[in-house]
Amino acid sequence: MWCITEITKEYRKRMYRLLNLYNKPYNPAIPVVCFDEKSKQLLEDSRTPIPMKPGQAKKYDYEYWRKGICNIFVAVEPKAEKHFIKVTNQRTRKDFAVFMKWLIDKKYRQAKKVMIVLDNLNTHFQKSFYETFSRQECGRLLKKIKFVYTPKHASWLNMAEIEINLLDHECLDRNIGNRNELERQTLVWCNANNTDKRKINWSFTRYKADKKLSNYYVS
Image (cartoon, rainbow, N blue to C red; front, side, top):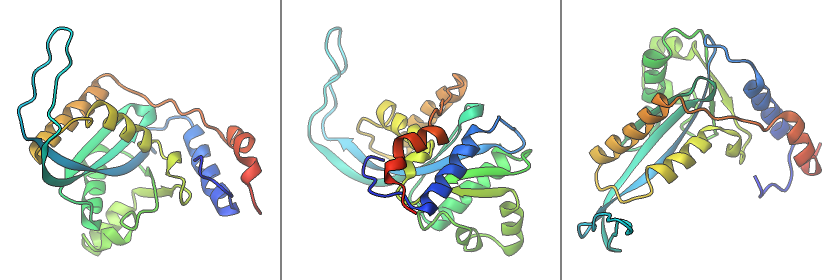
């Protein structure tokens, strides 16, 4: 956000559309789900850490073994306090499409339309569905999905970034050496958020955007 040099008409159009969407009352029939992904390098400790003791933090050796990289898909429905996580080996178009199908069929089967907020990564488009599923299946899934894109270079407008920052700080700030352990740790964190009904309170409105950013607006 702080690297902005100019905000075009197209940028404002997308920003206003998102902020207006966030400002709408909660509607379970048309949920707003924010989506993003992040990579996680798998690192295995070369020596067993020294356990935490009274008055002493857990101690790690600075050496580790690299064990590859995994991808983490993250989705959050802020107003409904719903959190979803899936770990995959990579983040191809197929992985994206399969995750979206899982969301629609397993978590939002009863919804009329699901508003998916996401950035402009080249996998985040309908093409991913057509490369993965039959045309009939694509039609069924895409009929229930409405993609709402952030402005280019403005992924900070996606509340899933808040979710990922919390995930990094509270769950992933440690060495994790294999995919099974990564899945276990992220699932525990995600389930705790759902149990605690953790909510994201978004307060950045169109009025605040104009007040804060209008110096950067260009026609």
